Image 1 (cartoon, chains in turn yellow, cyan):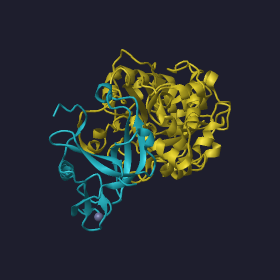
Image 2 (cartoon, rainbow over the protein chains, first blue to last red):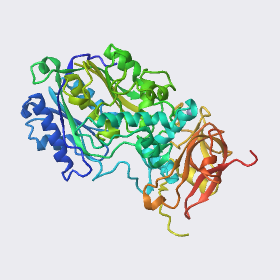
Image 3 (cartoon, helix red, strand yellow):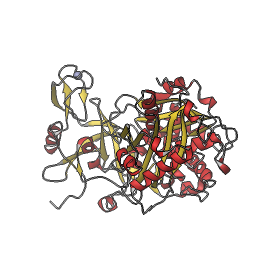
Image 4 (cartoon, chains in turn orange, blue):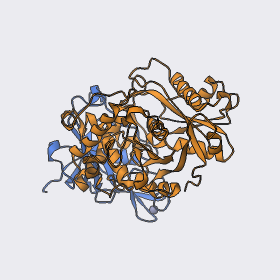
Length: 385
Length: 139
Ligand SMILES: [Zn+2]
């Protein structure tokens, strides 16, 4: 279990514009977000000695950013192969490296041209190697198709409805309306959700996240250093990464996952809350990985905000709205702000805990949850101001 | 046979018996010689006991639908435009393993959880036959 409660802070956040066609290289996006995070923290770029990133063969390696930024001596430059599951893991990795003395000031970034460049939802090779040989030949290829299989299982087990999924989409969009950098700011209602185009039953277009060009970065350092920097520090209280048995041979593969009506969240909940020393009822704002509407339900259940199977009713009655008991995805999430693979959730949580979220600020937000992942493995953190 | 423009399995050292079995319309699974556990997908080790010793046995090719999706928007568009809507399912075989497949021989709206199905091979190229499933006869 994570044993470094409150010993490290996120002292800086940075991001680029989120767009469908950046017209910039991924190296430019990554370096710009990292530079912005360093400037936000008030840390000299030369003082940065670590960089951690995650990628899906769609990004640039940490040493490339270290080179572009002219870091004199990057002691810790790590690339983690992963999808959204890794968005909190890289922050924990940075803190662990600092604790171990491998670095002192670490940037974490995620950068991609996810719409104009390599599209994660765009299909795969016609030659199906490895575990893909058991899925792609049946036309089971994209992540919406993967996740719809999980969602259907939840509907079978618990009677979860399209209207309940729609509540997540509507909530995220209502928050994005207040967020100047969100890619989708047109208000929607449940009727718009239900009328959106069927993509892969049980998913409609509005169940599925955006595709984005852009980058996010955060700067991690020891708490005693962070207290002398520009902004109110945001402490990493607790965190966890993992999943259950049979996590699969890649992030798509869940053929051997025991029960698709729950996901990784169930398996990390005890470590997450135990490491943080708080529980679900202490959370003021939750930035929950929403690559699809359904993934929010599974994480709310798995992390103990409600019982297994009750995620649908939980989200359907306004509880997750910005004026509800558990405001979620205050920036609009992956569904309506941008798909920066969950690191934008960490950026938003820091903004909320600093009190810098402007029109979308949740009053007096002291404790935030961030999660990352939807299927067999994932990561989460509890942050506080 | 005309050119087949959809993803095709590339058999490897672990899977070539499985795909060779499909080509002869037999659904082959590994059964651990040490602990008796069936496994799928094919692999060199038994995840239950780590033994390398396994026999290939022929599945009865019968199972039930665990979950399913109906693909309505084709991706890649040009590859699947003529196929939508089509059903992809996870099917639990009687032998205790689960596999991804297509449900054919009925409308997507007729697929239900727990529906009994049986294997129906389709020869898609000269080398590859895919194990799809159809509603079980006499159900
Ligand atoms: Zn065995």
